[in-house]
Image 1 (cartoon, rainbow, N blue to C red):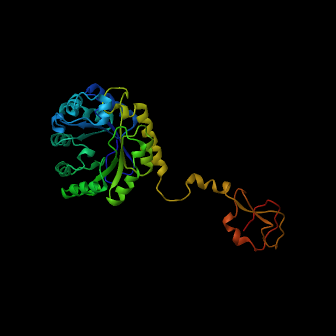
Image 2: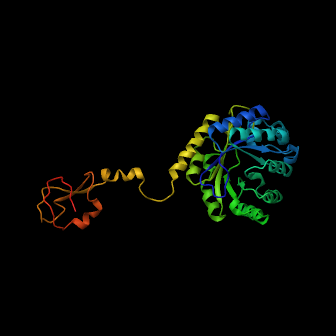
Image 3: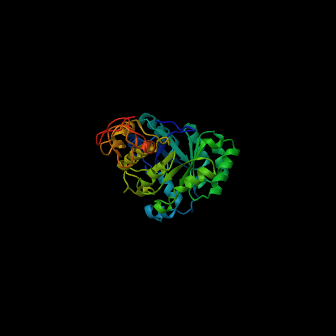
Length: 341
């Protein structure tokens, strides 16, 4: 398991278990095992007090009404999905045994204090708390690296949140801002990956993606675009009843996504344009060299009529053509023979 660093060289992959455990410890533990086998860096849960997060009359989001029905309110739905502190301590230990990091998004002040007691690698701030300045200040006081989701936000709100974190003592270098769209599932046309570039430039932060688009294509595109963190919901069964299952990756899909991201990371390289070691061995085989187009006598001048360019397995490179036109041959050459210095 890799640690979260201020200058992380590669993309951290977070498997978002969220509330897809349906309130079951058995399912939650199996999700950790599944995510670890998929090769992720962290498994993330959601810690909240239903009564602190929502009022009894707060309605569900539209996607939640579609996936769980509209008869009950948001607080009642959350109560069925909440796990307690003792259970999360067990899940944190399970993550350590499985070799992955434990993370949790806290949705209220008390839950945040509890998550901090577990000494996480970093804190995750949900999109819903982008403008919750008292909460942001509490996060900053812990001095841990932070992931800041920005769903529903503008660049001005992102910059304002960063200022609040900085004023509370957290260095901007410790923050990764995640492009995010909060509708589940997100349409590809609404993913707006270029927003990562905008925030990286205008807010002077590293960026990543909290991806709610079905499938893994958008996550791979984000990795190719330089995301240093990718967060993706997963489930053991997309057909299970619950708010997020249908928009989540199945286990095999999660593993495939991680493998794809690692391939993309390798393909990004270091940005220096130069031949690789294996390419160097191909140079004399693929590039062309100077050869005699016909028999050339010693002392004869080279011209476009008697000098050619062909793959000859080595010799004077094609880039020297201009220097050799008009030169006198120092040797006799047979047709197809390589030109010698």
